Amino acid sequence: MADFNKVWQDEGSAGAEALSRWGAERDRRLPEAFWECVPVDAYAYWGGLKYLLLYLEWESRYPDEWTAAAKSWGMKGTALQDLTMALPYLPAEVIDQLVRLVCLAVRREHRCEDVRYAVLARAIGGARLRPLLAVLADDPVEIFRLRARYLLWLLDHPDLPTPKTSQWMAWLKDQGKY
Image 1 (cartoon, rainbow, N blue to C red):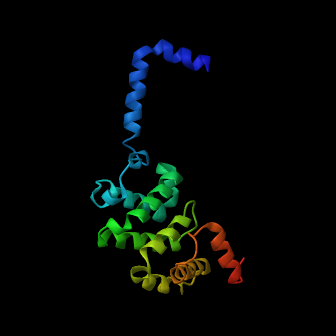
Image 2 (image 1 turned 90 degrees about the vertical axis):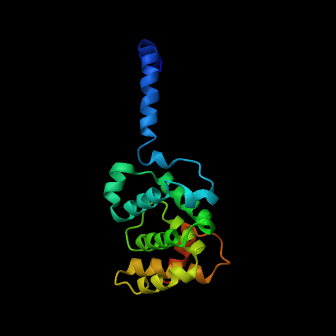
Image 3 (image 1 turned 90 degrees about the horizontal axis):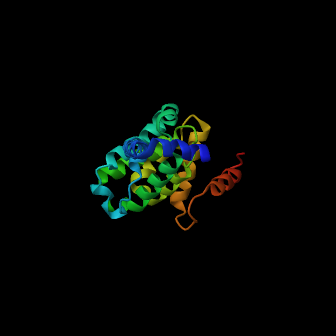
């Protein structure tokens, strides 16, 4: 630690200014650019919303590229949680995008924080989501079928606690899987 402090002492204020510029630049890159406090009732008007949705879509469609370039499980989880809470304030076209994101998550490899898509699905509700999940429930890939059926089950049981991984595992066991 003393060596680190010595380097910064030798650099003086120029080093502090460079560090400050670096921090400001970092905050404009993904995913740090999304770490902004936006009240949930203001999400519909937030200039970063369309980019946040693209960020989540990027993670779903191109997971390897996303992981290499802008991975942040915390950002993903926080974004999904915030979008879930913001649902009552979002316009229909944004909710439609969220429905597509849920369906994308069903039809890809499981990734960290994906349980938040189940929470989002339940918050969206059945009217928009159920028809698409019903189609996915007949997918030729078993794990995609199971995920879609689990989400349909969640929609049928709104009285259950907030979805979590242990609930998914218990559901799979009840289905005779795993």
